[in-house]
Length: 154
Image (cartoon, rainbow, N blue to C red):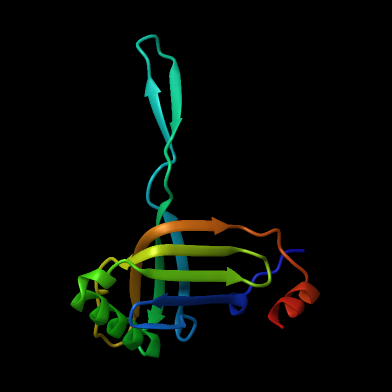
């Protein structure tokens, strides 16, 4: 039987200006990884045959959504400020995430902020979405048992 809980998902960022846990105040929309490019490039010949070419590279994006009140928003703004003030620090973040129960994991290396997030001040507070782009490596685990998870935590 498969079990999933966001409580088992751990994420962190490390880069010029700081390193910290990304788990505090994550909105229920959570974290999303997304490949930015197709791996396959099809070429169609004059006779209608198809040749498939595999592109190298794994450019991807990570989206992390926080509650408006999350203290991580302030930490990310500070990190953004450090990295935009000195261009040699740009694109040097590493974001890691893993689901310790199911074995899923991702790493976004050479990661850069896409921009400062949009912020809405309204009656509900909404969420703030941070977007990063870099080299994405991810794997989906085979799932785990409760005992496996407990042993991975210690």
